[in-house]
Image (cartoon, rainbow, N blue to C red):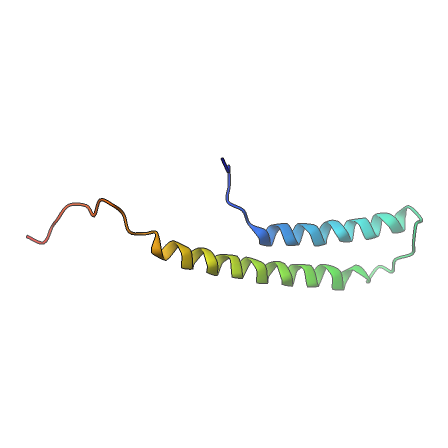
Amino acid sequence: MLRHEFQPGKLVAGLFLATAGVVYAGDAGGLWVTEWFAVIPLVTFGLILAGVVAGINGAIRRRRGAGRRKTADPGPDISG
């Protein structure tokens, strides 16, 4: 049973930010040299992609939810 809904936009953002952290950690550890500005395009692209994914996910959820709003019990008849 899921405890929360799946949000792929947050997953994409987290992956890109973790990648930026790995790039800086590799630089700090002496494995390679990274300029301070090199991660800016990586983070920017990751956040833009996360926004696009979140928008698509929201559109899909809205579209699927429209058909599920009908219930078996329509409620009381108040027409008179």
